Length: 287
Image 1 (cartoon, rainbow, N blue to C red):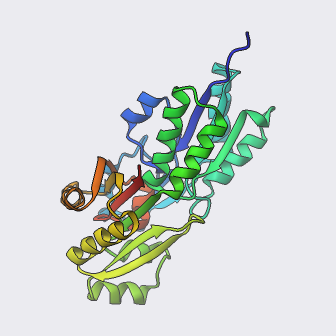
Image 2 (image 1 turned 180 degrees about the horizontal axis):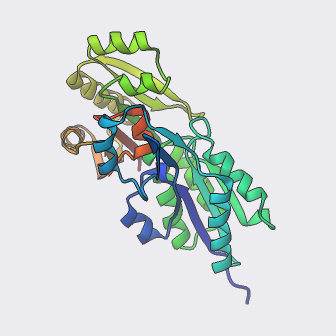
Image 3 (image 1 turned 90 degrees about the horizontal axis):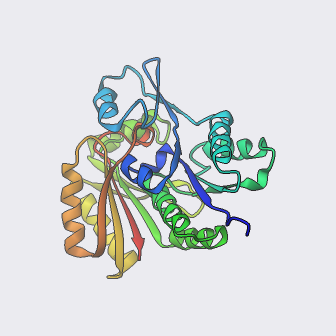
């Protein structure tokens, strides 16, 4: 009898999946790169979030981030297929509107002798918005689901997931070219806290701009209530340099939403470069 084809999951470091979870679910991770003051690090491999957020305020210029090369993905694909020639690889990556990572993975696929061994998926989201898709795919693969069923489920989850980012300072968005300098200066003077999200095409956009942190947190809760209206949800709270604000918003979410599960994770160095310290992320998925 022919062996059933197994499915292996590959992702990139911006999914911000804790290492313990990746190991438990057998998820392969290809890291992006971060260059700080002339030194290049591998995101979440040779540079971990706690180190990064200590280094960031001391950096003389804004760190630069770069995608993995096609060769990085090709090496990973070859290793997996050598270990198990009968497996199929599902490679899930951050929004192609945000990075060329998806393109690198697609090029690597085209370089394989048999391209049908790999499916590359644009998550059209970032951080644990991507992470929830990756972990779900890995759990389903471990339980024997076929590729079609996994892809259908991921499309459903993407439709039922909302991402909220509360940015503490406009400095990093300005340095990264996301907003103009004049807007950043004025916003800082007025204590403006932008609330960002990801649209259906995988683009970052501003949901709202609120004066003051307390009002911004209250606005996120209001937006969550409007979107999910008492339905059971899974929540992932993400933080940068301190978990305390994450604990505070988590407590408010518990008191205002029908939360079936809640976990925490870091916002890693690559995304942290663009949003800066003090940023909070809330990923909400309808159960």
